[in-house]
Length: 601
Image (cartoon, rainbow, N blue to C red; front, top):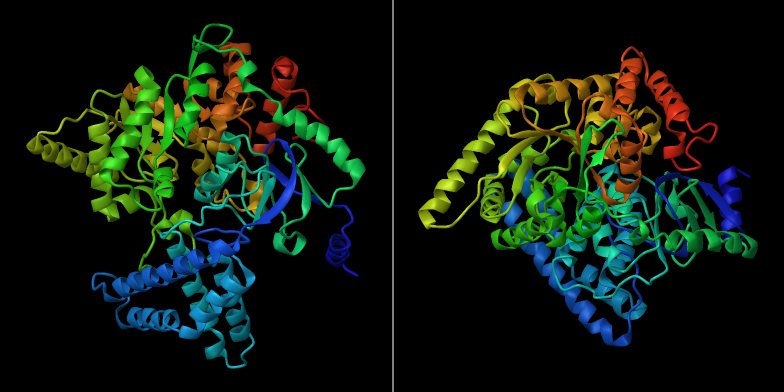
């Protein structure tokens, strides 16, 4: 019997089973599994009351009508690529959507099983897909792909109709192949206890968000849906990277204490700070907050943050399930700017990929990280970009707002954006509408931007350094792929040299530079950044107290010594070990008790 078969048998018998994982957000939680399915729109099984069934069937019927309208619009779009092939494909999808027997089976599933429409669509289309996959004829067998696409379109359309209005139970632990940030924001309202996923990394947007809302999360559980099912009792240990299925009474007793301690961590007890963070020898380091949810700034300010260094506007796209209107954007930007007050907010324009836009005609991208996303998407779809720029201009009137452009790879992208901004200013002037003068920044996060950073610096008011994507693109390592996690080395010499070059370019151009990736939120990396010349850092709110403690406990002179000692290191291992030794010898008292455990590096 294989190890996996033994594990499966153990799980079926209900005996305790321990699975090794990787922690991406620390903490301990005990709860009940809720399996999350779907790709573009994620969902879970909901058991309905009799009174809810009819409404759910109407919701499904509305989704079919919406999906048909979307497909017809795509098929008739003459501007898109694909020609006759596109028309044939989407024509076939329309035939599937028109299939009365498909509708009937899904509606009967909702009625008979008393489940939500998403779950009914899944189980019915899974049956069709299984049938097609068993057909001997290869051409017919490939039709399962069309069924998958149609199912995904119906599920997406369900998100555009009335909501199911049923939330997770309070002790729910989300299990999924991967969790989309938009899904996590939606489910966070129900207060889930933790997240377990198969895919994802420390610097993925979902992991960043989990840390921001203080939600324990682990990843790297292979074939996760074959190991767990909805309703299983589970413990998530986000400190040691472990998942315990069907825990015994003795194990529960042990972890209940740890979970209770984690829940009682009270950030209100942390001292508030009015003064900026300073090293022991007086170098001021400005700390700002990275935010997706505006309500987090109150706590960030109490911790000593001076404004919002990065507000990710794409979470408005997730909140409104599509592009928010100009009015909705103005209101949202004003709200966050009023919270930040005199210290201001730097708002990144939509960092969206083609797969996140509903009803697109383009084929699915094989490598989204290198595809149509961020500034490329904005410049390709200028109508929505103009709306966002116009909203930012209006919101910046009597508010301190700056604009950050993501994934800049060429000076032309900045120049073209500046022309659009001037065009929108002229439009607002003609209409007699007040607007401000927001500063403009470029995110330096791809290698080409590093090599031409001096040219970019001449076109902007300040620079933002995004270390997460910078590491990904410099080292050719997918930040969300756990199988190559060991190659994601933040302290790789190439990364350090890139940071140093950007710092020097900003200094030469006499403009500010802010580091706003996860590197800024790590107490281990903070002295390295300071030694490289960084004076502004923006981070997850919950990272602020510990990073501040490190900043205020080191001397700038010591960080310069550290930077000099790692300058000639030839490998990431050498740099890691050098920084580790330096921290252990000089700053051990500034770090958590378990930070210097053997084998940590």
